[in-house]
Length: 297
Image (cartoon, rainbow, N blue to C red; front, side):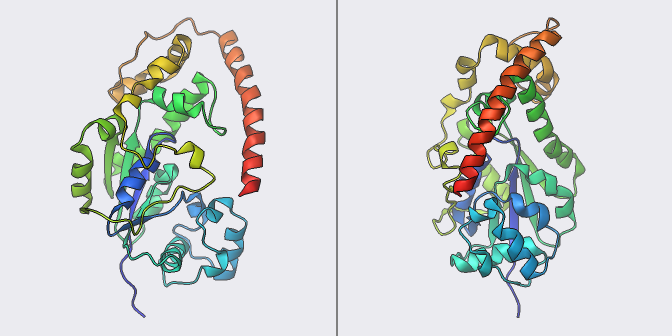
């Protein structure tokens, strides 16, 4: 039995950089569809599991449960790998006709190398946002770093795979600045054109933000808000900005984000102990909240 072509658009970048928003907007286009984040690609993308083993793994994966697809409804759909089997099962279960799957999982560039071995058309979008704005947003979620030092290293480590993939050249990788995306009206149409998509709005494959992350993505369905670009300037303390820039200044400059302070040579170990103590207290509290919320899924 022949099957239709299924193409992927992987939107990746550091968490809290707007990947869900961009994924939502792309999933509204004709021929596109999306789903909640797919961290379970770690054991399904580029790997073909036996269906009983795959179903058992998915049953115990709370990320997969966000998709609203019963594990028993996942079949061998003649996909290139188990992830494609899941996608085709999801599309069939929800009667979605789209052929371009928009995946907005932030960690998508971790799968770039595996994607180079796939036969299907896979395009990547690297969404980059000012690290200080990312830290300002991370402070409000229960799973992210709570101190400017750890946030700086978190941000740099998350954008690294995308930057390396940009330089590789084997697959289509388009870098998009979050600030351009929300403030430049021509940014999205240009991106759609480069992806070879049709800018007709369709609600067939629209991304539904799941209950687990709904509180974190309240603005996804709204129009982009340019005033949020610099909200971090008012929300972060002067010291938080100084510490963040102390560790990430070179990365900020290379990505055309202007530092507000000079390199802080006065950052001493006792400062690190101070921020570490605050971080650990918040981390323990956040961990308990995270586990409680995961159990409710």
